[in-house]
Image (tube, one colour):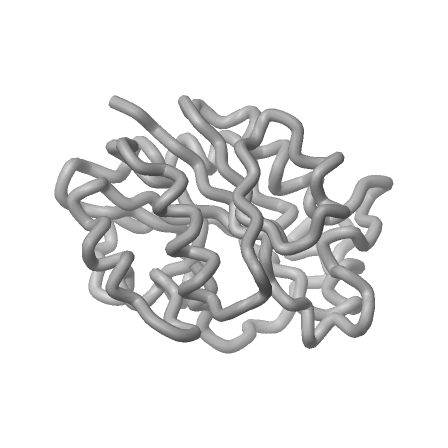
Amino acid sequence: MIRTGILLAAGASRRFGPQDKLLAPLDGSPLIHHAADAMRRATLDHRIAVITSDALVPHLAGFTLCRIAPGLQSDSLHAGLRAAAGAHRLLIALGDMPDVTAAHLDAVLARATDDAPACSHDGARPMPPACFPATMLPQLMALKGDQGAGRLLADLPPDRMLPAPGLLRDVDRPADLVRRAGGPGGRVSPPGPPRDAI
């Protein structure tokens, strides 16, 4: 079985400001480093990073790079899926989620089957990271515009969703860099809108 990780790191960072948020420092390293390092340590056969900025390249050692022009969510997803041709499992993660661990990625991978995906859960809704079987590739490729793969996870049964308290922070604004979701002495970020960026 071929397990391929797709790290989506091609967002426009509009809510963050003029700086590329994936290069913003967090705990001594650029934001992208944390998600990339977790995927490097996960049990995968191949790793792909979808990017629009070459400035991210030094932080993506071990990844096959898929460069695209700035576009919509589905453009990034489709590019990663095309680059992952032949994979039996497609593990999709986001470059702006720095607290996800390799152990959690492995758990999501293990929960998916040949005919059903698996995903993370923050206690309120399904979220990335998520793993899809190759049998769902047509449905993933049919997503258009700013539709992410999250819509394919909405009706998953509870046993396909892995609770991940404290791991699913996503950084959209500079203030999110200083929030610690359940960390020691940290503040818990308030729930945001449903996450549909995968």
